[in-house]
Figure (cartoon, rainbow over the protein chains, first blue to last red):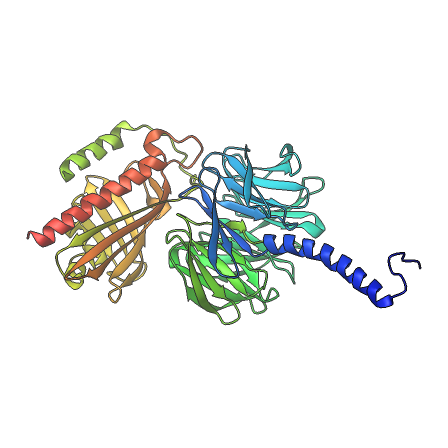
Length: 328
Length: 183
């Protein structure tokens, strides 16, 4: 093995090799470091997104997007965040890590739930009962999936090419193949299912049933409804923490978050947050959780391990952060 | 002022012809919110004595002629605010605390007529806090517009919902202040 730049000194060779490796590694690490420690909080009332530094729990930047932003999806590749704007039927595209709004495109009448995989962006339309699939590279529509009535939540299993959709006015959850864009199976949920999140370990779908104050647990493999867990009033969204052992559920009308032990499928504690909590997002440390309080214009930071509130962040008007709001 | 408002809303009820599907329970995609406050030259506990009972809203809300209530101040208690003959709003108590001097209630969708109040999924909190020698009453509402689908008629859109709730809160709080300060 010849390395012309090594010369006689093995030490120098190693040093040079180290410098080369570490400099390319540093560039990559920098890009990741810039992209990573942020949460994107959609503020419905002032048409902005608050970009929050998740290490310091402070707002870094406020981005102007479309009208009444609600849904958010920060892609797993860390290249983009997409925001649904139901007020004007558009999607705003945020480039990462530059934090620039690079595009705002018309999509449909009432876009709400939104999620991206490596290539596609899925946007559920509340009025038209469809899920539009757009190519991330061109932002052009490449397909549409007929959903149930009032599709309101999306969860993606990118590794298995599966998309799960809650249909609020049908009380169902649908399983969709993201390659063929075909509907595979449909399962009954509780009453008025809204936020849906897939648990990392057991692959259970936790679904907040807004009007019967419960969370449905559906096995994503069998699409069988396993359990219905009573929570607070008007549950909205769910996020998992501590390797999927806990599920945190926002209860809009109770101004609280229920923490479910996913093994026993029982609520083990309830934390009081600010008013009308909506989007729930777990930070990359898998321990701290952001809860957007729509009425109070704040984000509550919960330590899931200690089951306590550790900080409250002021954001814009009407924060929702509905979807995946945090860099993976 | 209230009489005028009430008459105009009655006119609205009978003049607006909106065909809504009786079975739809959907709502617009974005919830609206309203917060109104008033400073009152009386202690918080004196004000709470007037507004604190869920079943006595008719005693201080100008637009309400009568209130039929069941369940007192316990969670799940109900009240019917009578605004006129056959013009009623049905509300349910969610939370009540004499300690924090606040209560929260909602209007269940199943019994609500958007022609009376152009909102859906309405929920609200009324509270009073001490402020110097006096107090501040805050009334907060969260709701969707009256027309659940796309392209709402102007009288059932987001702006109409916010305007209607704002009007009720402002008139109610102004009347309350007047009632307490100028008995």
